[in-house]
Image: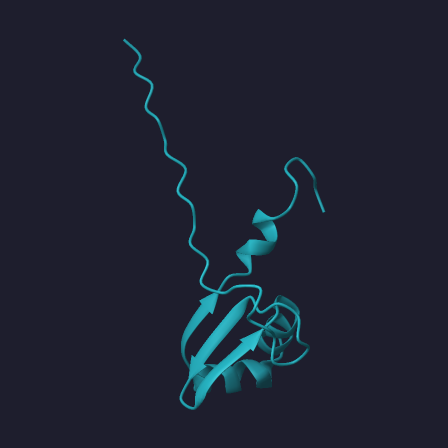
Amino acid sequence: MNTMIDNPVIEKEWLLSAKDRCDSCDAQALVRVTGLNGDLCFCGHHYNKIMNNPEGYKKMMSFMISIIDERDKLLEDKPKGKDY
């Protein structure tokens, strides 16, 4: 006998909203880094730029206490069935 099990879709709760802005360019922030002296917010572009630079990475890792990384939003918002 085959039993069908429903797999409920779990909605991800996003913590950053459209009101949160990148500290570098004022685009929507997708990453919030909490550090020793406060918070820094970044769009995906500027966060990647910092983390892909060895010196920027080193500085961020010494500053960072916690991080909210919601760059997945960009993938979730893509139309289904399209490759970009």
